[in-house]
Image 1 (cartoon, one colour):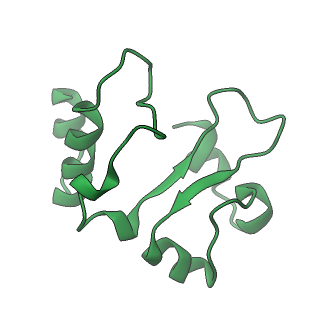
Image 2 (image 1 turned 90 degrees about the horizontal axis):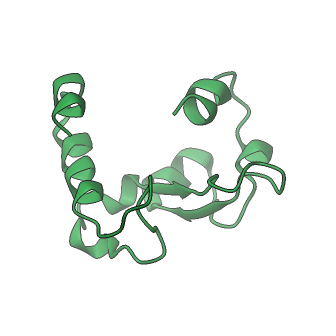
Length: 98
């Protein structure tokens, strides 16, 4: 977490990282199904959850999207395949290198 704090400057990103680090479990990523996003209500509009722990063969489904994320895409994207709605050139940076 300290290395992350050295790299990130944005208070919201740091608050979200602290929230993720506080989640129980020993997986590489916290269990998004068990998370209570209402513990970070001011951040929830900017949160989106993608689960690619089991690979990308079945697509990259958006399991949750906050209201500001939906506004950015012009619709609710929860349940959609991210690769089919994201027209940008930065997929590798956003997903594959994260």
